Image (cartoon, rainbow, N blue to C red):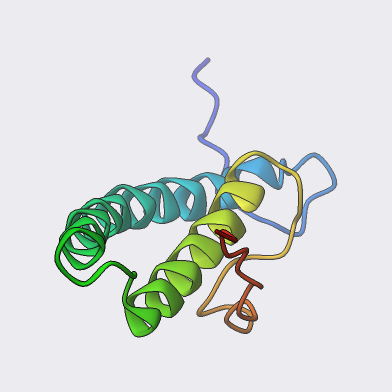
Length: 103
């Protein structure tokens, strides 16, 4: 006899929560992949500022730090370091302190 297919039910005790996490991980992985390209572009632009003005642009450094902090939040979720979903399901990460080179 053919058994009937079981319906997807998250309230059953044998439900695996990893099935709900997988789509989020894939979506955030795609977002992280997309965000890597602006970081690379910002690094080229910063090189231009360093080359022609002698100092990096502070606003671009701040923007880069925010993007990197968000990427870190995504990578922490994808690698199971935390169970808290990244932005927009939680708050944006705070700005990280930047280390400046002393001459």
